[in-house]
Length: 582
Image 1 (tube, rainbow, N blue to C red):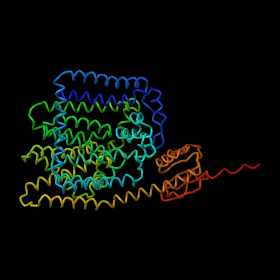
Image 2 (cartoon, helix red, strand yellow; image 1 turned 90 degrees about the horizontal axis):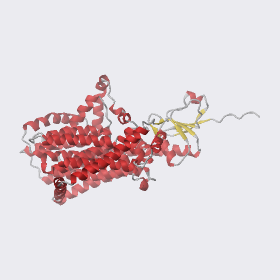
Image 3 (cartoon, rainbow, N blue to C red; image 1 turned 180 degrees about the vertical axis):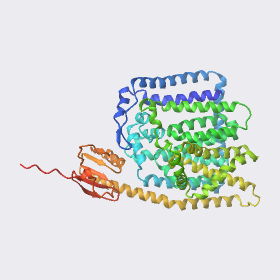
Image 4 (spheres, one colour; image 1 turned 30 degrees about the horizontal axis):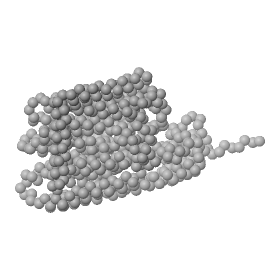
């Protein structure tokens, strides 16, 4: 318990210190001015803030009080030799874990090293092509325009949309002094960097926990799927979420398999969970899975200490996440944090009618095939608990299988209980752990099948062919998305340049609102944009979908005529008023 007390002080100091640094110098008037910022949801709007002088004072008191109290508590704990010994123990565990990971890499054969580096090079190369060749997406634009571009203060407290993935957007906002003139790189390089480091680390850790062949199979199959490739390059933070889930996964497995790394495991579990929740609140789904996984791996250990540790770490994670979101609650209001259409329950009738189609769609997007994945997944979901109960598995294999199973089954059960339809981007991690559970089952069967006689080089060659073939079969989809994105960018840029050359003062947008707003911001164009007509307002131009050959009835009555059209938009101009007779 001594270590958890020190860990609590460290985590609370880091969280309150970060927010005190960001918001401490900010006046009440400055925060109140956030209510004048535009954002785009169904329409361009401004957020009525929940901020009051009392809330502002309470926020500052909470941040400075937590920082001061945690510092005093931490210094007090460090006065005792037993607590300092806990930190020395943590340092020894970190050194031992690092040495073990380095030994795993050093012990690879030259062929294995070449295969591993080749796979990482292939994955990073394809991701780089997506990063540069795939145009800005709608959600990326919203994150950039209304949060990252406005700076860290806005990012940490202004929450009109669930698009504000705060920790990821903060990382991007801190890069503005260097990449402020290159918004696409500003939003995507942090994701690319985190994905590169996370992929290499998870590859090495999985090789350490299992073997190089299984790690190559899982890493290759997952990271060459279109969804993984896209979200590793996309500026939204979903691959960052995956990396944090992976860190939490290896920490929980380590708790059950290698108790002598207990301090390091709890440190990684707590920090990854806090950052995961601060990145995307829906991290609560995999966190619930990891909590169940921790209970499964700790169950065989006698005594009550591990259960108390699990409870205390859960409380610490919840308290720290609440502290990090305190600026959102004080400035934007706590209800905004939960105002996400994807977690609004559907009626049972609606959910039953579309659940199967939704499952098919998500499976196709994540794995590329549907029926084999669902059949195999259903079988493993039923058989893994039986194997954990009946088979005498080593602690490591038991922990790997149990935690992986929990990460797949718990989100499915919670989603069904909530009757929600999470988007594919929020459940990309299911593909990684789906491939992992399938590979673990294959490893289990191959190790007990006497007729299995392939040598390790033959296995590695077969795995390499499977990974490359699977990636190649799905690469046409990746190329199609790149081509579609480039075509969209060319068409929209063409339309904007035509429009900007005429220096309009007021434009009504019925299509691609975020893109035209972005172009106006980048070109410093002074134009009033709206996406809902105001009564009595005469707009210079209307931007509508391309199939709309004539303006709406209210616009035709004012004399709007088509003046520009391409594959994506039609632009209508207001006919000039007739000259008055002299």
